[in-house]
Length: 130
Image (cartoon, rainbow, N blue to C red):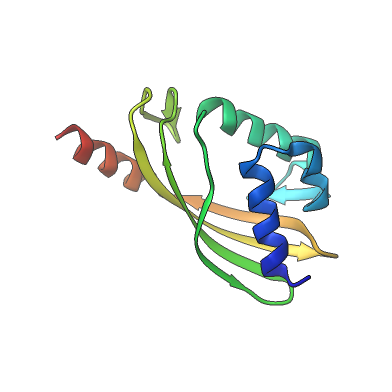
């Protein structure tokens, strides 16, 4: 299966919160933004995201893939319970994006580089408050 299909199946897995299948898509020694989390740490990160954002859903807005890398822009429209990236949200609706690059080894995510624009979150809250 091409990486695009594997990545789309991974997104479906995390949207379904089927973390018992996470190892089908993520390597045991996965690295996230320079930190070795391992599969258990990656799972814990997602569980924290689900706790902090009860209606979290990953929507692929843009996807580019080659034989070892996937680049994606993810869209989020959700209601974080407390803070999101240090910004007080307290259940208000927020729309934001994540730009993320994945490096695959043997068909599994080995390394992730993720950037979420805190300024976009703040501006979105200001617009919704006005």
